[in-house]
Amino acid sequence: MDQAGRLLLLDSASLYFRAFFGVPDQRTGPGEPPTNAVRGFLDMTATLVERFRPSHLAACWDNDWRPQFRVAAIPSYKTHRVAPGADPTAEETPDELAPQVPVIADALRALGLARVGVDGFEADDVIGALTHRHRGGLAVDIVTGDRDLFQLVDDARKVRVLYTARGGVREAEVIDQAALQTRYAVPTGDAYADLAILRGDASDGLPGVAGIGEKTAAALLASFGSLAGIRSAINSGDPLIKGAVRTRLEAGAAYLDVAPRVVRVATDAPVPEIDLRLPSRVADPVLLSRLAVDYGLTNPLNRVLAALGLG
Image 1: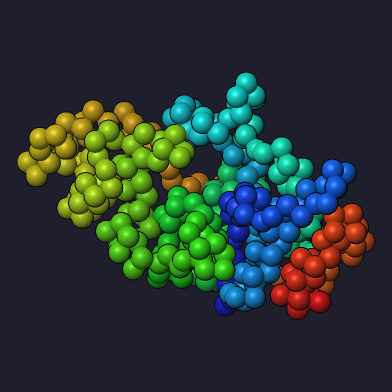
Image 2: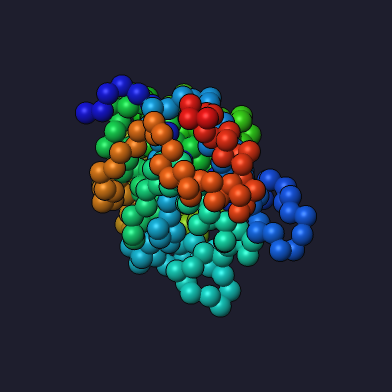
């Protein structure tokens, strides 16, 4: 088991998309490469390291943003994010963001920060697998703007989410079990996953159970403990579930059969064993220098180096 410390897990795409849309484009001529997402991502990383002082860090990557096992279960999964007329495995990405993603990967490599992805799986699955592997040995902070990862919150094992959707990285909202209870009336991350299955999520193309909203889902979970408990009550004819709610849950049975495989992160994703400790030296000074010169990244790279104690 790892020695005591803190593991910071970055939902990388969530951060670089936010950086792309939130950081001004500072180019002065048409021949200059776009760098706003790179600069924003590096600044966010520096801010997070400065604020939370992790001992370990992984930038988690979408090797497959729309895995086949999820599409096979629910074909509508993320269909609205596929570029019109494009390969259905390709996510629609702004033209000026696409060339910046490899630069971010190079910057992480040069700095010596771990970048972790697994073919056939999303970054959420990588985060879930790393959380499952290290929880209890390390405190785990998951940085994301995606509510899906609230399902991993676990106070007893020191797992929380730093939620960036509202205030960004500088004012990230800490989501622990108390926050889940306050916001969604569910007591645990596991219960949040069941709520998300019932409610659905239009942003991911997940229909949910028609007519079962967040409040009804939370009330059902409070009464029956879990999605499995609700379904058992339906199947046994429990009189506490009646009328329109029963009808809707029965009509949604086929969806509920497959939705858990889509909504729940794959904590068994085959993530390789990799050293996630913060670097004690720059991994590739030549590459770092080239990135600084070619892309004008001296200031953001220096800020990350200073945060890591390497500046």
